[in-house]
Image (cartoon, rainbow, N blue to C red):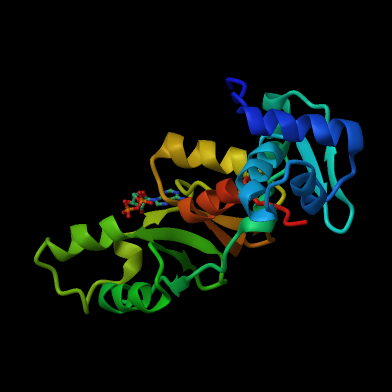
Length: 212
Ligand code: ADP
């Protein structure tokens, strides 16, 4: 990762915090004769890039870390359990037609399929439904287990995994989502879902401006 180039004002802020931290955003603004809202983007960049740390009700202080180290530390700490969503699941015997309706109603891009013991048995994506729909089949007669991607070919993750590992799996396998599972006696229990949207949300959270 290349170090971020700081502008003149960001360097001035760094100097103020190095010499006076912890210091609030309001106090930094006063010293520079600017308003707090003018400074907000600069403080966000300095915090995101790891030059500054921010603690609510305490203030900004200098972290002293190298930029790239701070960013990779932040990424390495992002865990599946903190960003996962609720999974949308269907039974193996549901018809393709009903599963398509379910996908619309749940407003998701993939469904996880459960066997009779409620354990993970398959994944259904939009493309699986499209492929079946253009194939001149009666969608009311085909059960989803006929068209799903099935175990053991399903890529999954655990809630203790990092988002970074998940992102690598999504890219390598060219898929949009992973079930988050827990190992049970009879198979894998589906406890969550991680999608590209969750990863995007995590990416944005790196830029959180801890508003002081
Ligand atoms: P889309 O169909 O919207 O492009 P994906 O790229 O996720 O969605 O799915 C592409 C194919 O990969 C589909 O056939 C789907 O069943 C399969 N698939 C999706 N997620 C997984 C997964 N976690 N493990 C294995 N196969 C998957």
